[in-house]
Length: 82
Length: 372
Image (spheres, rainbow over the protein chains, first blue to last red):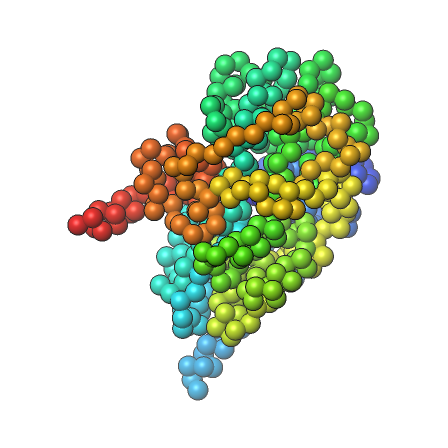
């Protein structure tokens, strides 16, 4: 029900509460409301739920799940060697 | 980076599972709040990657599951009326009411339509000014901004033949109800990433402090969930009880402010009944007085109707994490996704349906072994 999917903004039209854009989800394009992400630009990835973008994906933070793993791996090795 | 496949990497998942195993010294019970997370956990077998000491309890986080019986009855009563177009998300159509579901109303000739977005229902209303178009506005905080927008636009554009049957619920009061119940087993929560994308996570901080439970805002892909579990277990092992954010790529501390603003403008906080749980104070959203004219319950005269729930179904105990689906005597026999007794078997995200879809054969084997 709270399913939301990341997609990339291809174009933007309109302003404020009628701001919308075409968002591509791996080749499938849909018209999506961008009213709630005024900061979003063409080329950004947005998280889309029932036709509404609810956030802009933060590219740097997106990497932290992997960075975290790397850090843990290094910590684990340190623990094992000590 | 497409932000999907990368988070399903098998080697990375196994590294997370090993890290969790290294960290765990005691038995812990964690609850994932959101039905989308339950679905991922059972589909990818994440629970089976974890050390035996860690139990995942499946929470109440599926709006389809917790919509009370009487609201389903109200929906079918409205949908059966002539000149009504009743629009809903698809997964509400098979939820059983007291005597029938929305699909059977459709089969009898009712004009019931599945829509992707509430604004699609509004468009149907614009195109059919001679019909009453009703949207079944169910959901958690994630869906509230979309439903608020549909009502707001109907008001602005005077689409007077549009109305909404509202069954909106809120996550923090449900977490508090679970934690304050005498039979509570949950020691930490994976909070729902998309609910927090809209609302932020500041309202979880007093809950973590009051009940001394770690709460980790978590995403939906396998690596998100494993990392969320790791962060929960690390807090439990270190006797910390804080709110942490795993789903950083989408969730900001204060959430989505423009979305919250429109939700506040259209809705107010009200008490709500939860299927299988009962009434929880201040746990849902209802239309504000300025928008009350768009309330389908008042427009179709069903506001006073009430109904009692079936006593055989244990979905209430499943939703609170007290029982697992296979502990129900009706599971997979008298209760299946084709003929559900309760809503946790209906929705794809319901714990019973997820177990039925991915686990029923191994459960039968386990049951047979126990029987011997």
